[in-house]
Image (cartoon, rainbow over all chains, first blue to last red; front, side, top):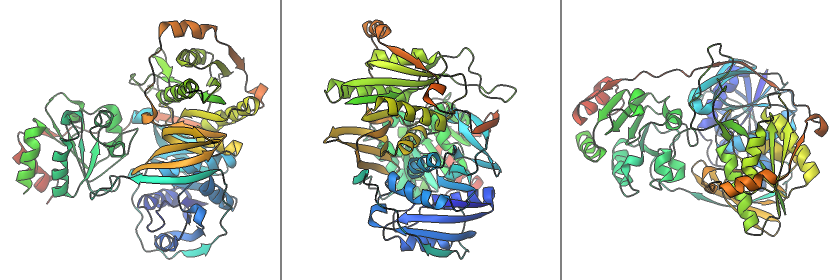
Length: 310
Length: 250
């Protein structure tokens, strides 16, 4: 068995989630190759080839592959799928979710989304109903397509020596065009991958008050997150959203401030190593998953926490 | 321009589902069923396009059991013009649904298909992308803004780390994210009007589509429960615990 992995990257650096997908791919298929499709992405191919366990790294380099348009990336992946792969994997990120179902459909294969465990080469566990249940599903198709929830698999380390092989880029589909990107600029670490995440909820009361969390985040070198309620209220940008409809995170330390702990939020952070909850309401559901709970007014507790941390 | 919107009947988002004791699935007997919230946003968007005179007709489509008629009636009450139910008792998986929708696209020839980015029951997030691929069309997933001009759709997408804008040639498939719009409340007069709008039923066989499931659910479990830890009396104790017990801060 052999797996093909669609690498996520920004043409300069390989995204860390790809390493978690490698771990899942090797668990499922034993051996794995990687496709890096992009523009001027030679450095990414180098990084992918250094991951332990990787056989080949295919590189498709062309200007129309620069911006991860689903139509072009899917066509590129499809061109390699026929080479005897038993598994095709991508990270369960906005990138992987966008591209992989296109390829699966063209191969007339089902897809298993958001895999959290490999049970057998054709059998995987995945959350359903916003994480309120875990389904174990078996795929009957000749090629198993899987998007992988990165936080459920270890990050594959370097130590490999894969061979890099250029492949002909597919033609531009002409169906879609990249117009632009508004990347939220922040000097904080990225939410997915940060060792510490500090999230605020509706109790913060305003976008202005979220700045209080920024000071704490600075001290702990943490990424900032928010509950859906806080995002819906306009206190925090949407890409800060942690939860089933936002990002799934599993940092070493997760500090939930003024978050009640709706099921949909818990689905996004309950795999964190240590969870701290600060909330005025002693009955808030967040305390049921917190390792350390502090019943307090956040507007007193957070400044005190910043002070005590020094 | 004709717009097709695709809606799924799912367990209402306010219901806390329970895993059946025999681990064969979740118990959906006697629970409230509703339209998938992301699909409601899709219907609303289509209706706004019609109100802006950018769309001329809205066809709502659902696939599944006969009770999906209720879901389709809701979309008619929001403002769709007519509805088609692909009726079957077979468990439908995303690839099968995409094939059914592809067959209906062939019949209906819509210029734009809008549906939710995922259904809140199986959380697959596949059908729109699969439909686009099967029809050889462009896609714009996770849309938070949609503008139509010159035979193209310019779509702002919610992606990890921010927003991205793509321009796709029509016909195209768009899947909705939460911030695209806020669906209107359905009014009683519109519910009454919806009852008179046409709703047609077809079978998967009549569309020539094999809907046999490819994925077999072996079991469904409760998620592992995280145990509650301790309450700390004050900030000082919290900091001490994090430093000395959990060792997660310096």
